[in-house]
Each structure stands twice: as C-alpha cells, then as structure tokens.
Amino acid sequence: MPIDLFIELLFITIKSTSREIDYMIKVLFFSLMIISTSGVANVWRSNFSTDQFTDEPSAYAVNGKLSMQCSGSEVLIAFDWGQVTATPNSLIDLRVRIDKNKMIVSKAKNFSNSYESGFLIGNNKAQIVSQFKTGNFALIEPTSLSRSYPTITVNLKGFTKTYNLVSDHCSGKLDGNIALKKIRKEKENEKREKLERQNKAIETVTEDCSKEGQAKSVKETGLTEQQVMIKCRFTK
Image (tube, rainbow, N blue to C red; front, side):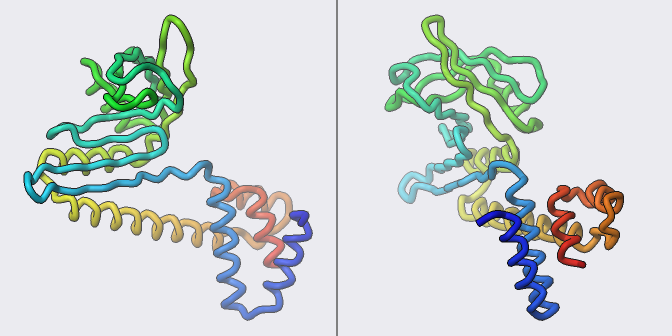
C-alpha cells in the first residue's frame, strides 16, 4: 500500500474516534516512527548463574558480535568474527579503533573449540576496555599477511553498565539474581524515560503548520520533518 494512502486512511480512522483514542494512536504512531528512525537496535542479553556445588560464578552477556563472560574472577571480552579466521587456540592480530581515537594494535586468541570467534588478550586489553566504556562505536579487524577479513562494527551503548555487572558477578561481589534484577530495572527505567521524551516531543509540536513553523518544530523537539508533517496533518 502506498505510504500516502496509508496516512490518509490512518488520518480518517483517527478522526472518527474519541479524543482519548485519538491521542493514544498518535503516541503509538510517533513512538513507532521514532523507533524506526533511531537505527539498529542495541540490546545486551545477559545470563548470570552460580554453580550449586562449587559456588563458582558464571556470566555471559552478548550484543551482536561483542560478548563478555567470566574467566575465573576476570572478565573475558570476545568477538564473533563471522567467518573462519584461524584454527582453535590460534593467535590473531587485531586492529581496533574506538570512535576517533588513535588505532590500537592488539591481539586475540581463538577459543579452543572455535574457528570463528576469539577473545581479547595482550598488554593493552585494559586500554581497549577503558575506551569501550567511554566510546560509542568500535571497529575491530582481524589482520593477516596472507588474507584480509571483514571489519566488525560494534555498538558500545550499554557496555559500561553490562561490563560492571559481569565484573562484579565474576569477582563474587554481586549475586547473579541481583544482577539480573538490576538489568531489568534499568531497562524499565530506560523505556519509561524514552516514552516520556517521545510524549513531550509530540505535545510540544507547534500548531503553526506553515513551512517556517514546521522547521521550528523540528529544531525544538528533535523530531524529523516527516514526524512533524504527520503531526500537523493530525491537528488540521
């Protein structure tokens, strides 16, 4: 269905409903619009547990091609290369760059049971983790004299919170159940704050739907031109 026809039908439907339903549909529609324009979703999936016989903590968190897990009391940072890079246990040279910082030359080691994933090692691991915590995006590229590999792009949003929870659990400072509760609570707070921002943006769109008025709304609310245009159509 053409987008213009879809908008027209939606507009007609909303006009025929009550004021409360009209507002709810607007909020839902604009929420979907904002989500659809915000880029690829960034979601950390985490699991925490403690062995009932040894009390050894276990944690695993993954977001796309970046993951972390317990290695004793330390946190192991791992990458999914997405293809065969080397035999299990092989050392791999890495080029790492976080945002616009200077490139870091480092090393990784393939897992003992994998040709396609490995974990970060080397003296500059702490430097990389530190930049991960303050950065937005990272580029990681396995390098070899004989062939080239695809560059991995990693979204670092939420890395610091997740790393700290995994680190506390691995070192025995934080029980796994408490860690999961913290993650759930943080996610609920983020969703609530995001919805509040979206609702505020929708309500503050100006009733001046002239070209100049729409441009002002885009500047003041952070909504896109298309979102402001649709808002104006709803308020005609």
